[in-house]
Amino acid sequence: MPAIARTRLDRFISRCENIHRKDVRLLLAQGRIHVDGVSARSINQVVDQFTRVTLDDRVLQSREACYLMLNKPCGVVSATCDARHRTVVDLLEAPQATSLHIAGRLDCNSSGLILLTNDGAWSRGLSKPEAGVAKTYRVGVEQPLGQDYIDAFSAGMYFAYEGITTRPAELEIVSDYEAQVRLVEGRYHQIKRMFGRFGNRVLSIHRCAIGEVKLDPALAPGESRPLYPDELDRLGIPHVR
Image (cartoon, rainbow, N blue to C red; front, top):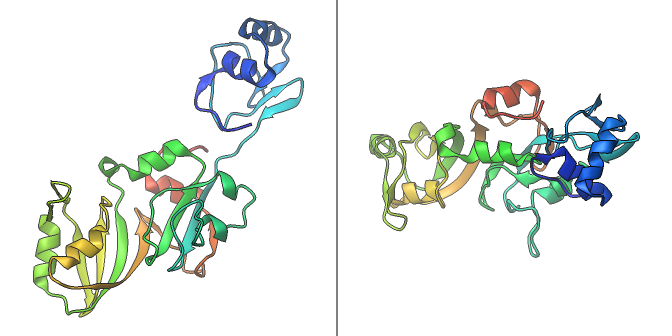
């Protein structure tokens, strides 16, 4: 059965069993419905996509929340399916891979940290600029960097196409041709466009971290692992426990 949004228990049972909602009251009175292992008592009880629901010990829904980090290689697209290119989901071995979606994309030719989940509320919360979850990138460029880059990134840049000024971004010069950039938003090709203001071509982009969660150095390109509970907590976005 496909995942559901939040709904009342009687509506959920009615849809699963193809019975009238008034008949759900009798099932509850007989103690035949359990929600997360506890006998259900109210037809108004709210269930969501991760609520375990059973009827007469028969499982109607049992779905666990999944949160993964993946080290995306260059040349792999941030999509769940693509007719021409290999996708990040193609890299996963997890049996639930087909139910996952990407929480924060990377360009095809960029590499690094990608988060995947089946928790839509969590991924939406993570992507909102007002949540203040910064993304950190290591960027290689064609021409030498200087203080003027730091000042311009910090001030924000006006993008005429969207009619917006970017939020202040942090730029740290690592070497003459490499910088570390922290953004709290993700406009279309934002990093390339910001360096493009200086006529400086970006040669590589590698995402090192999302918020306080860093890409696990033990993950080779294409490998993934579940996020640890403390990593989920450090992101500060409500999640299923």
